Length: 343
Ligand code: ASP
Image (cartoon, rainbow, N blue to C red):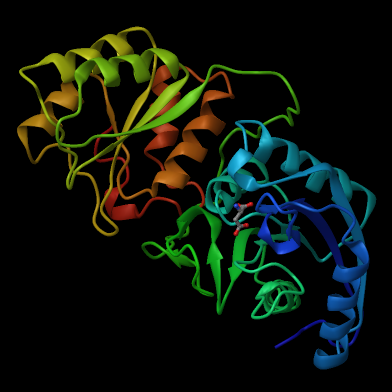
């Protein structure tokens, strides 16, 4: 398993919150800080069981959170901490202990923000808090350590239950199962190394908001219009099947046309767990394309939102943003579905 058995495995662990370290305060489960000793003990157990000596540098965010409270800057702040730690150490990998609710969103965003980082970054968490009967915290931390010891190569991953998922294809699909995440669609590594412009590390400033809107039977076009105005930095539009939506005459499409006309990119994905968007197939898809929407191929909702948020912060021209959005950068978009809906 390990190419590192001969020497010490060096791992940075950053604890950000989540059920992993929560305790019931009487008001329900709440994040708890100061769990460094407990994590160090779990690492020692791993070292004893695997025979791999592990050197750990442990840190916590100043304010650990229930990841349901992740905001648009959370992933960028965690990515900045990861970079800061790696600049000071020669770690073989970084483990980020995170809440499961937004782990796939934050992990996918970190994958883009940390595109140039040469070591694996592995997010993990738990469905049941450390120390409680049936807790999966220990096993998941051990899986994360094992994954780094196995040297999967650079990239951002989610280690959970029995699997290591590429963050750009992962989604939380069980609220209580030990295998809480799935890899939706096979990752498709790009043929050429990514040439995406590198993001500077931002830690605080607000940018134009980027959001996600799901269509549904009975969707009010005014609601879509409001979402497109509020999230004027870009909207991932999660449509049915191959990229269809309720037309309501033309009012929904007109809302999309007005948004793209204002410079708001609109990226269409499917809510299906397999298959891709094909905007040439049905009338609503063609209308979306004509209104300036971008086909998001087979990207997951988490990856599409992460990629659009990342690109929206890079000051790209609309054409460049569309080109990158429809190009497979990290395995988030299969080659068969990429670039087929570029403008
Ligand atoms: N609400 C928790 C969180 O995302 C759930 C978990 O960690 O499993 O922080």
